[in-house]
Amino acid sequence: TIASGVAGGPRAGLAAACGIALGVMLHVTAAAAGLAVLVATSPVTLDIIRYLGAAYLAFLAWQSWRDRGHLSKADGRKDVWRAFRRGFLTNILNPKVALFILAFLPQFIDPAIGPAWHQIVILGAILGIGGILTDGTYGVLAGFMAERVRKSARTMNKISAVIFGGLAARLALT
Image (tube, rainbow, N blue to C red; front, side, top):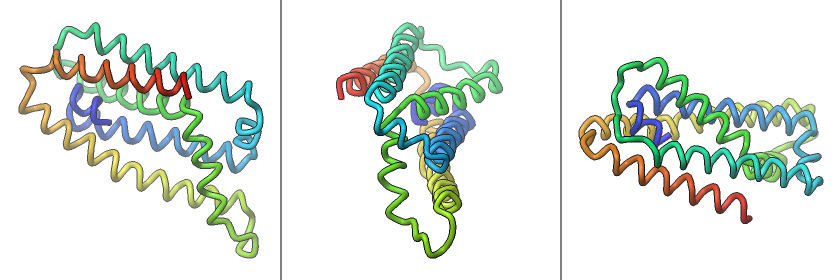
């Protein structure tokens, strides 16, 4: 969200947060359907998702590194859609999010209250809304700050590239 806010402004930062939240809801839906258990118990499936996520982050690093430092807002709608897509794909291709949801949400499930899947969806919605509020705040603030430092755009892109590259390496190696 911060990189999207810096690159595309406050609206792009908020769009990235919404993409991340949609990714969380996809993971929550998978957990409610029992698919997260398959991912957690199948090392091959987990590895495939992990390597796809690492490859996507490496691609984002490469894109950021090659960017010539133009943080123009010529096409705001395109920046917003790109930020949303980037947030969503980064989230759904990160198996650690699925594992977090699988490990975190069940501890708050009470079978006496009702069906587990229903409670997982409600808790996931709360998690998604909280994510939009926090990640959205970071993205919007980064967008406003970027307005003030547009002249150092190339440096910001290089920093984003290094961050994405580091995340890709960490995801691939852990």
